[in-house]
Image 1 (cartoon, rainbow, N blue to C red):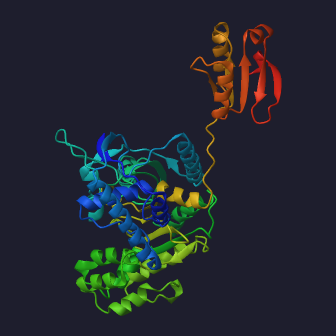
Image 2: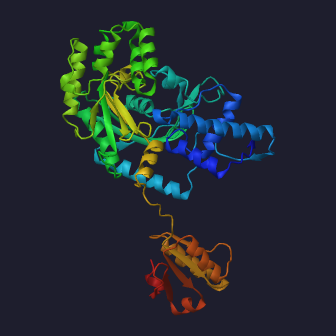
Image 3: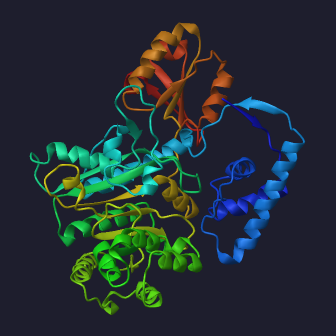
Length: 493
């Protein structure tokens, strides 16, 4: 429960806010208003999303309008009231949304299983020393740390790669390689909510242990592609940005000091999200030399045009070529700035985006050959990816590819009279062995029972009264066509 204000907006202003929602800056109108309230009490920057330069002034103007309206209403002391609402950065799934999500998840699960991957599940929380064993500083700041009750320190998992790696360690010596596992569960990250980025979110995580061959990397990328194509998306809708960390690091050996290497890689990974002058300033701050030459190199998009000299870069380039040869080229785009934010990636890396550039990354992953050994296991290569439901659902909605929810029942049984209830419920329970069946729980009259059956979109209605029981036959009405048929009660199940 929280104390809040009811902010009233004109329809015209709501329509303008919807422009920001369509641009991916906010997930919905309410979050834009919440952001305006937060701006009054914090100094945090506004979310930028992927604002096209041509729309920057328009976006700023709308944000300022909302800000002024919110500030005005607060000053006027609009009466506050206590309300219950879901926490910022989370989503409530009502029956329709739950059904859609379940259908998408069924397709993702089936696709992974068709590739020979088996599903696993880990606890929602892990020991903090496990979560922090190897991850970037940004991720460390995003962990939801649980209140410490004793000597144990726990945090909510922020992905499944770390927990699944821990699970693999426990059985590393017992199971045949390669090991192909996936998980589809909730994760938590403490960060600023935006369209496609939540604090509590669902993610498909796919991990492959035991193979350092290009076939393993290709298997992971091909699975990611198939997850999307099996949902109806095509190469016109999304593409895969691909690179290799060894190749990038080998190239940077010529330009960046060794002690600044990881910082430079992190900066390059953010290149598309920051202004050109910020990127150049960052390179200078990290003592990078020949900046213009490096920038030209990073803008090479044909793998056959890449010329490298260091052994590390050559190794990475060979790995990348071998992987790309095993993946459908219609989906691939070489991008030397792709490095992935997490520090544990060691080889081929990739990210998947919608072709219009409207949303955040749909999926991302790569090779992490050092993690198993770092966690105390035997040296073992590994690769994998994560695919988030939040952004995926936005793209599927835009393409009109979200599955249609089916929350209706097969039969609604209308019971007439107290004397038939016991026998009626017996019939209902028998039907429920095969079908989705509902009946009146509020002692409504027959007319209202039919009205309710219509409202819940029951496919068929069965009427059971004393006459039906004595005859051993019932009438079944098809609610779509209006046709009726008579059946023996014994034949219903």
